[in-house]
Structures are given as C-alpha cells and as structure tokens.
Image 1 (cartoon, rainbow, N blue to C red):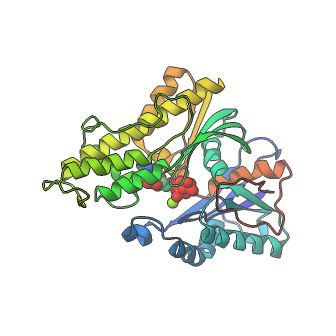
Image 2 (tube, helix red, strand yellow):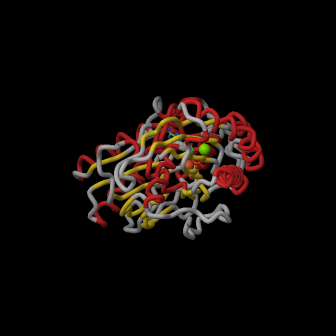
Image 3 (tube, rainbow, N blue to C red):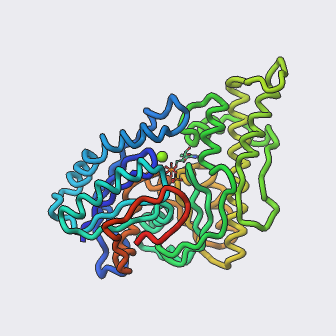
Length: 353
Ligand code: ATP
Ligand code: MG
Ligand code: FE
C-alpha cells in the first residue's frame, strides 16, 4: 500500500510517499520520497512564525510539494491507496490547508483518510530511523518549537503523557534567546553555532525543576535570566533599558551557557522518566533533537543508564511528512478518519478518528 502524507502544522510544507509494511500490522514503512518547503526566510524578519503568512504560503506550496513527492517516488496519484494528514496540534490556518487538500484528494479518489497527531509523528520518526529495531515500549521526549513533553509510549499510537512544559517550549526558548542575542532565526541552529565558541560555565543560569521529582519543564525563567545577564552588560546600567545585541564573545558565552542549561534539564528529566517508568528505551523527536550538544549529552546518559537511545537523523527531527508513516499503525488498527473531521489546533487531545 502506498500512502501520501501531508504535513502543514506550522511553517514547513511537507509531502511524502511511503510504502507500507507487509503484513500491514508488522514492520516499518519505507520512505519512497519526502520533500519539505521551509518558510524560514519569510518569517525571519519577524523573529518567529507569522500565522497568516504561514497559511498563505502552505496554499502556494502544498500542491507543488505533493507533485514533487509523487514524482520522486516515481508514481502517479492513481497508485496512492491512502492519505495521511497531521490534524493536530498546530496553527489553525496551517492545519486547515493540509486537511482540506487531504480531504479533497481522499474524497475524489475514494481513499481512506488517516488523521495523525503531530507529536506522535515526531516520536515515530525514531522508529522510521531504526526500522530493524524495536523502539517500543519506551520513554518518548518531543522537544520542538511548540512542545517539550515526555510520554510513556506503549506503541506508535499509544503515547501517555508523563509531563511537559508549564510555559515555553525548549525550541521557543532557543528562538527567543537567539533574538535577544541578535543571532537571527530560527534560533536553534544559530545558538548552537554561536555556543561552539562560548564557555558554557560563563553564566550561571537557572535550571527549573532540576532537583524536583515532577517530570515537568519551565523555560521562561531561563529566557528572562538571559535578558537580565544582557542588561548587566549595559554600560549605562539603566533599569529596563533595551540592551541591544551584545558583543560576539558575550553572545557566544550566553549561547553556550543557555544551551547547557536547557540540555542539563532535558537530560535530567529523561533520566528521571526512565527510572520512574523502568523502561529501557528512550526516543527523542522534534526540532531541538537536532541539537548536537543534546545528542552528545543524552547519548552519554543513555550509556550510563544502560538504555537504548533512538534519535532520528536531523532531517527527521524537524518537521517533515515522512514521520506521518505512523499512519500505517492507525490503518492497521482500523482508525480511519471521519470525512467530517476538523483540525484541533490546541493541546486538547480528542481521538483523531
Ligand atoms: P511543534 O512540533 O512543537 O508543533 P514546530 O513544528 O515548529 O513545533 P519543529 O520543526 O519540530 O517545531 O522544531 C523547530 C524548533 O526546533 C525551533 O524552535 C528551532 O529553533 C528548534 N531547533 C532546530 N534545530 C535546532 C538545534 N540545532 N538546536 C536547538 N534547537 C533547534
Ligand atoms: Mg517549523
Ligand atoms: Fe514539529
């Protein structure tokens, strides 16, 4: 069975063609093609995603991306046997573009439509990346622009929340700190690059809940601490003064100290979740999982704890449609979407059926 997957939850327009495992309930799909059109250049000057621009750009990009995914897979739409689309969570206007296209194609061709949860898809990227290994049951961490959440994953479509951020997501903190440091957008890659020439011990930044047993996160205080550290650099020392971008070495030291604080907390909470659940596997998905320092530190932790670690390659960490391969597990479980299904922008999690 060939499946066409569509991802438009935020500011990346993704399309992919996946070939299902046989028998359907077993194995991992093969990615026949996966293409992503990123909108970063359009949102760059605003320092974050502008929802209205994102939806309009999805309208412009989606059909060409679908054509390109089919072309690269070497198949026509007539060969596609099912359509999968991410229907939650995300920006409402962005989600609507993908769902509308998916519904129209499914209806026109009489194909089953599968509604996918974007977070389950980020976690499934771990299984896609390691098709020959058993990823479940595992602790799953989604760490991205909008989420920092821990799950107990009994299977690809059985993720139970263990905890999450009470304010900003880790990726959002990277983006805001990059903007404070005058490094540009998106924040993750530029902060990581600046951090390479900085001292991670230069600034003593807060690590929320580090010694607490709760499996929750908070990153807004860390972001504010970076702002205060920057104000300390203001020669005039004016209260509330906009510090402006710091000199390069200060930016590098702050970037490194900030990144270390985020990574310390993420690694500690994964360790706590593993110990608490007794699970021996850890999967990490989402854009921040592309961070080299996180990958290094979490690998060391997994080795210490004797657990198996699954982190996808970078292209499967940030938004893409291939990770919607989780749809095959839903098809195997008979979870086909109602033709009237709507998007669910927020974190309320009604069934995707
Ligand atoms: P969500 O998945 O929560 O709906 P999203 O889809 O926008 O949000 P992703 O594409 O999964 O998020 O991830 C984007 C985020 O990942 C951005 O905040 C970006 O700064 C961050 N990111 C990307 N690369 C890195 C990196 N190397 N280090 C740290 N963060 C990174
Ligand atoms: Mg994005
Ligand atoms: Fe995402």
